[in-house]
Length: 326
Image 1 (tube, rainbow, N blue to C red):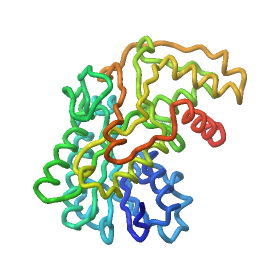
Image 2 (tube, rainbow, N blue to C red):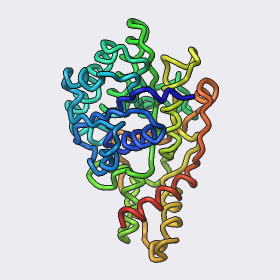
Image 3 (tube, rainbow, N blue to C red):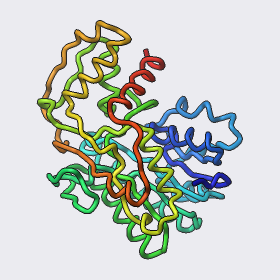
């Protein structure tokens, strides 16, 4: 299953997931256009692609409609990853989060309609499940959002649904569950928990777990996400289009267990890490207690078959961090 004469626009292509997607599809001989404003992405994530004639960088912002139109020139598929992530950031600055995640999304979606692209695949979020307590999370059962970020990602789904029904666009949403892996930024106030903990442990600093550590997440290795994007982009199954999918491994891990996994993995490189103590702080506002995806729909309609469990993914990720950031 491929369409290797095609050109793919990857928004947020200098970010963690976006840069991995750029690399993945360049290796498969696609032409890749990366759109990024470098507000959260990094040039070093994509600089190895600059000499590749199949790679084009457009530095620009989704909030500018003309930039969206320009970036879509000659494009067949869109993989939309650009967003202001992080629940805490959205609580601190809901206006900018909405501006980027809703207005920027709508700009790109409308421009994609005008450009007549074949399919629009976008990063949705497990935060959409909100206060729903049902486990595992199934795509049709959601609760009320618990943060401004979650609201923006749900609004994306509503717009995508309207554009598919009103304008006949082919649109697929991927609800990412706690993605981790190579190139994920460990620094900054809004760093994701795995790279942040890894960096702290490598420096023999105590990681701080929010709450008692019994909150659980469906941590999902980056290679599973790459597979889902490819399947969503290329599926020929009409039933598989114009819907949303959980993008996860389908297993959950508590934060306490996660830290122990990391300590064990990192101790193979530095035995002193085994002695680092873990600290517990207060729960974080807007966090959902438990997250576990049902991936039955993706398996049934897209033939999704995730290759990396949390333990397999953490081994790969920890080695990458040790080799690149130590």
